Amino acid sequence: MIEVDYLIVGAGLAGISFAETCISNGKTIVVFDNNSQNSTLVAGGLYNPVVLKRFSEVWEAQKQLETALPFYKKIEKKINRSFLHEISLLRKFNSIEEQNNWFTASDKPSLTNYLNPTLENYTNEAIQAPYKYGKVNYTGFLDTVGYKHFYTAYLKEINALEETSFEYDKIEWHDAKLFYKNYKAKHIVFAEGFGLHKNPFFNNLPLDGTKGELLLIHAPELKLTKIINASIFILPVGNDRYKVGATYNWQDKTAQPTQEGLHELTAQLKELITCPFTVEKHDAGVRPTVKDRRPLLGKHFEKNNLFVLNGLGTRGVMFAPFLAKKLYHYIEDNTPLDKELDIVRIYRKMGIVKS
Image (tube, rainbow, N blue to C red; front, top):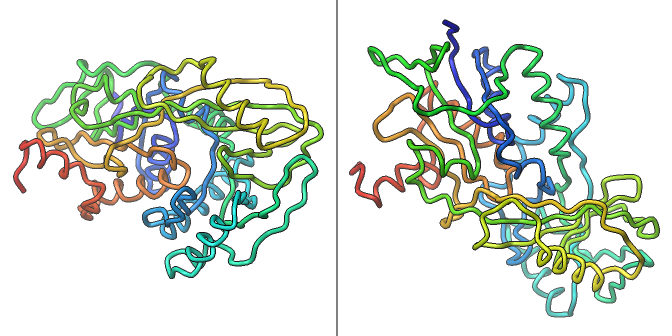
């Protein structure tokens, strides 16, 4: 029987963040991952403290950035790999009205640090921008594919990875102690993304799921050095390759790329750039979204050593380390969770708990 502090189910952004938080605090872990959920692998990996559709601040954006960026840099140093790329994001304006909305937003105290009040005249022959751009500060992207690949390789090296499906019916409790196959653990944290729907302990939570499709294109004449945000985003990843995304589909819950998604993205791309491009890859995944736009964090209403870390939505890169830290201190130090995050808010609406 192997004794550990935590079993962690899922090795996406959430699971890895919680695993590293545990290891950094001297806790023993085993992570279970069968690669059934691919939202981390097909993500654009962008981090951005502003909701650009509405010119509003992401909830707790500053605290998220202050946690996430040092967290990723620490992992880079630890495993001697580079994943985090700090790169400017430019919001392309389509009218004077959009410019004015930007100026108004940049005057708001909550957005002053993030929205540059001076218009950017970024010149690129392949993009027509008569109304110029607005620059967002503190932006960039995480190479999520490399990040997961090399971090799970590290977990393998320290004998902390089980590349297999987690079997919920194999959990046993004896004298309030938790057992799973040949493991004895203090806690289990489920960080399964959209896979939560198969989890009998937490599948009553309102995880919705939003399908997104993403392209990798080759465009030698584009020569972008910044992230461009318009109706879609274009993200330079090197060697004349660019990620282009993303679609939002609230009905289709499969991870299969579609012709509709391909047409939507290529049509918008042709409206944005004038140079030729070829599509080299077309991916799809289901983002773990929640209707109230807040993550799902907390403890099972009956099983005191089962926890959930989910619902990171479209902002997993910023959210994951921030939420992992909160959940860890909730479990270890009884630090209360924010009411906006705690799944008690859901249990109360369902009438499962009263306080």
